Image (cartoon, rainbow, N blue to C red; front, side, top):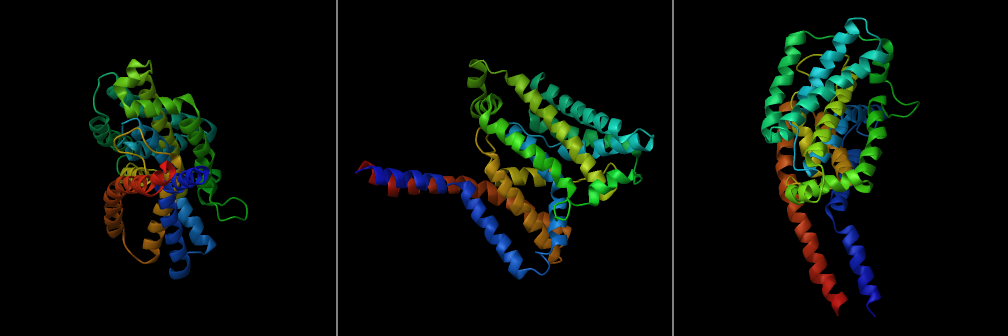
Length: 336
């Protein structure tokens, strides 16, 4: 007698969540763009839209882990800029790509490790630490290169930045994200590391008393963030054929917006990469549509700022609404 209401409750629980709500909004926006925005559905525009989100897509992966663990990294854009400068200088010095790439990744790891040491060893808040290193790392980039830029890269590297995969509109610059995203998703949802991250974000004190190496885990997350940002720095340099200290200004706001819009709780301990992927797609679509409608960068920044505020308000309210609907209209039927 109670099996059907129970099945109904389970079904509503599966579909009544923020991820599915966000997916519905994203699909609706894409359908609107396809039919109402000229040239949106052209292969060239799709390729450009995907390429334009490549660096943000990479950086949001470790950012999700950090926010779930109640930390944050505001220096991601500065690490991207600094490592792009390091990479450009290495190439300019005649070092082959096979050596310049790992050295650049090591430089990113060093930046992330410095953040991690200040947070875990000295007990400083990550918000304050990375706010400081956001200026520090970009300043180091200016010391190394000044206001100049490096635009001379090997052809194979530049081809990676502009070519697509075969005859598809998929740019090569998004391939690193396609490779890393499943690995991050499995680590977060299926591995002990993910359970430790959720435990730390849920209650750091309880995680410490349960034997979780809190400092070691958080330090590893910052190092991972630095390495991924270094990879994003090289992707950025390849895509724009440009390495300079002011690359990717403001990208940290975009990345945090995507993470929070994807349902990652700013208070830690909650969220999945599924919602973040939908948020990433929605963000890329909105950016592209605004560009096609001739809406400038300042106005786009205003929209992104509003999107960040709205995502904080709506995501929390939506979860309460979904839970209330399930409890009021379906749980009561199950009990009956």
